[in-house]
Figure 1 (cartoon, rainbow, N blue to C red):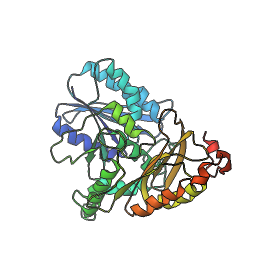
Figure 2 (figure 1 turned 90 degrees about the vertical axis):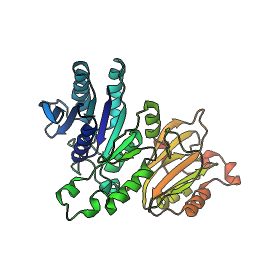
Figure 3 (figure 1 turned 45 degrees about the horizontal axis):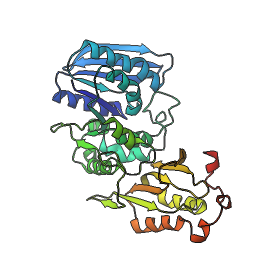
Figure 4 (figure 1 turned 60 degrees about the vertical axis):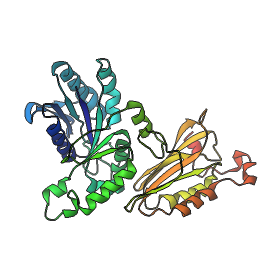
Length: 367
C-alpha cells in the first residue's frame, strides 16, 4: 500500500496535483476534503476518476482542527479498513500537513501503516506574490475560517519545510487566461522564477513537474519535524541545519545568506539591524542569542512583510548561538555579515551585567 498526503494553499493546485498522481497510481483511492463556509465539510472519494462517495457534513465548530479530527481522520481510517490498495489524501486547502499527521499518524501506526510521502502542490508563478501577501488567509479567500489570521507566507514556509516533495502545477490564472498569461504557464518566466525561489525555500524538496515521471520523495517523520521546527535556519535533505556558513547562489536572482555570531548580541543594535536585514527579504529565520536575556533561546522568523521573535525556552544543553539565514533577491552578503558583527558585544560589554542592557525588544514579555 502506498499512502500519499497532499497539502496545498489552493484547491485548484491540490486538485491538479491529485489528478497527476492518479495518472501514476491509477487504481488508488482518492480522498478530497474541503472546508466550506457555514461550517460544512465537503468530502469526495473517487477511484479511477469515478466518484464513489460525495457528502457534506455539518460541523459544530468549523475550525481546521475539527475538520481533520472529526472527518478527515475517521474517513481515512474507515477506508484503510475497507479498501485495499493505494490511497491519496488531499487535505483541505490551508490545513497544515503537520497538524493532520499529528492526529492521523498514531492511528495509522497502530495498524502498521506509514505515510510514504507528503506532497505540496504549488503554483510557482504565484509563489513570490503569496509570500509577500500581507492579508490573512481569511481576507485572501483562502480559508473559510474567519479567525484564521495566518498569512500565505506563514503557511507556505511551514508546509515547504514539512513536505518531502513539491508538485509544480499551473495555477488558476494560467488556466483561465492562457493567451494573456504566458509567464504563468509551465516554462514561463514567472513559473521559472518561482521554481528557483522554491529551491531556496525548500532545498530538501524533491521538485517534480506532474507532466513528467513522478517518483516521490520519502516522508521521514523525525526529519520533517526538525525541518519545520521554529529556529531551523537552513535545511538540507536530512533536516539538519547546514554545517558551514555560505552564500548560496544559482543561476537566478535569489540568494540565501547564512550568518553566525559567536557572542551575544546587543539588543539595541540588533533592533536597528533587524530593520535593514528584513527589508526586501522574502524569508528569514534562525536563532538569536541576545545579551539582556542570554539564557533564553530566541527564535527569529519572517515571511514576506512580517517579522517575529518568540522565546523557545532555555538553551539548556544546546550551545547558545546566533545562526540566521536570509533569502532575498537583493542580498549583499558582506554587508549583512558586517551588520551582524556590529551587533556582537564588545570586550567591555561582555563584562557588564545583563541588567545594563535595555530590553528594547521586550524579551521580558516573552519569557
